[in-house]
Image (tube, rainbow, N blue to C red):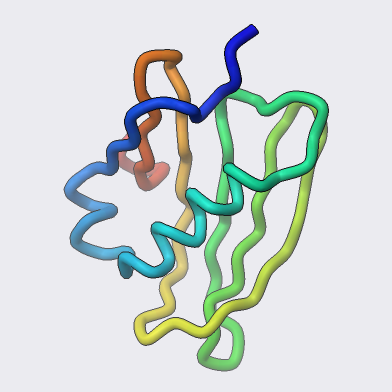
Length: 98
């Protein structure tokens, strides 16, 4: 079985316009370095603002995985983001763009 998310990465216009590049890169890095026996094709990130910082909850359904992170951000946002691997490419998008 091929490793997931080891392909061309894309993001929607919404992500490009609203999510700082540093946060985009951080999310891709979280997927790349997660320690699980298998990556689900769907990675879910719930972003909230906590005391001026960007709080990130990274989850996948199977196998179950959940980690919290808090990072500095010049423009923290509240949003749900999906990253979907369809074998030929991976796409980052806001949940409302799905």
